[in-house]
View 1 (cartoon, rainbow, N blue to C red):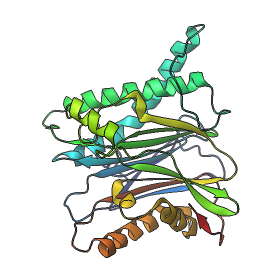
View 2: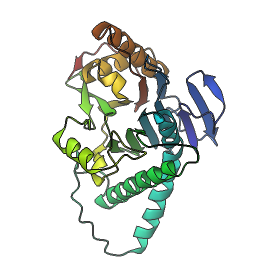
View 3: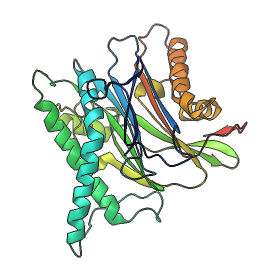
Length: 317
């Protein structure tokens, strides 16, 4: 079924790789040239227990599919909430998407009325996008309920962000709740450029502040945000210029720009070293920029779309 690297998942998949990472494998069937084209790394900050969780699942849903996710917990039990979501979301989402696809096949003339924001108009069909959209919103709500029903877990005031990128063939389906971020590294005019795939949903945004005032605390949310259809950012059709995807918690983006992260990943010695290189750079940046502040947890997922090659290209944007 594929290869999955997951952080903070020892309760379910207990094959230890190192102190921060767990690896589990199920019927590995990764096509030639794609195995090992990614990395996951996290480092606890100085605020206390690491509340981040992350996952990189290659072979997700199809031979050349992938699921990437970063979840930044907050509140007293944020570390538990982010862990639950990281462990449960991928399988729940794929099951729901497949079930909806089968139902839609039986319905002729299915009318899709939602306005869809597309980055590339030759992307996957609007019907498939609608199926993913419906599945993600539905599963986020299911996760919210599951967390609230957990025995001996008080999730009041606790929750997690969720940034997810699903690679389905040559298409990316991107969903986001909160201020974790996904960025695409692509070659433009012989330079590596950064394309931000998500919008940081921080309380400073007027629309986000308004939502926070209107909703109650939930398990999968960021400071009061609950799942909305708007959590779907867009679909992106991959091109030969697109090189890699980076997902990270705000502990990284608060101190390193998109451009700097693209440069670090592009210069990394290998695909396996890329995520760790970004986290280490973020940790140093925290100490240099905010010497008196507590360092935030930093977590990164890197998925390479092609085998990394040595290059001295400049970085743009």
